[in-house]
Length: 427
Image 1 (cartoon, rainbow, N blue to C red):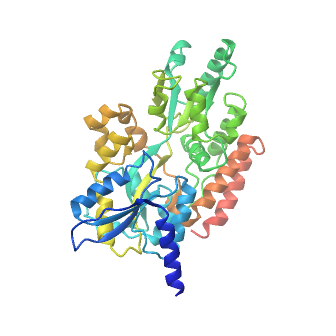
Image 2 (cartoon, rainbow, N blue to C red):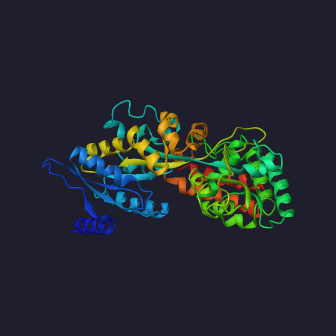
Image 3 (cartoon, rainbow, N blue to C red):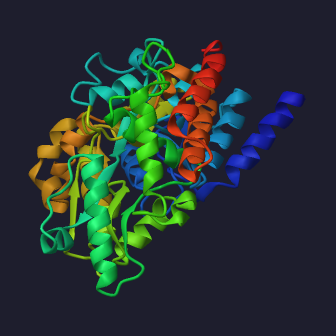
């Protein structure tokens, strides 16, 4: 009876999220019925479109579930369902940092897909989705941090796109002073995400890794953050606050930073690929004046970008794992990823699509992303597993303390090393 009540509660939860209450019914008496958790159901959620096509082609029935837009709320929903071993949802869309966290509840897709199923995908993304030798998710679309800049202002003041963080600092300082002298008192040199949240983890990982300071935790699970290059990267970032970046940066997320840049009040912006189309939209103050480039690097390091993106996985409690895996294979196949890129502008996880003429015609900037995505650095989510949220929380809080002036870089990485080593005993 208890199990029945729990199942009823979960079905009630799912029922409240069903998009339009629609099941894609078929005439096939042998058809299976599965449920997929898509995105928030807004205009950018291409999942329902593709799922309906798959249902029509295969004759299966699919219930489409809308999930919260907020990633934390989405993860909480998944953890409730999977933690109770509910079979209510078969296919789920998971964030790039969740495979290690949810792996115990997900099927090994390699048991249902062809041996060459991952050929052509970015190897880094496949590695990210492989936990203890199990392929627990297939990459669907990806993101990576980028540097946006004002082409017109760099040309006006005779500067090139910076290749190092120090060059960015000096150029931003000079152009900011000139623009303010010309009457724009609200102009800043550099806008980035500085709030104490996951977005700061992505920014700070780029600073540290591009200084040659490692990736917080290496692939073997060793904590590597306590080093001079990592400390120097954080100290440099702290020097930007109230100099080339507003003090409000300490509470800025992606949209606040985009707003500053798009309104014409910043020379440089660190953000994700979605900004390109918006910054060049009809209502943008900087349309036609924007450039995009790989992020700078430190004096001893290479340009790196933190990877983002979403993947498809199958619940271990699905009553139809083989059919659910077939849907995952369909969603992530080249034809569907191509449509996703052209219709919605999402970045494919299949390398060849970055040379596809139709994809490039729909978004010329897509081709420029290839090298950045190839060299992208994942957050240490797979190796730290269920402890990743604690690792990220510890990291962005220490970084935020450095940006706020409460700690210097050396003290922050030393404290962080001790805290993460204590956590690492659980990995």
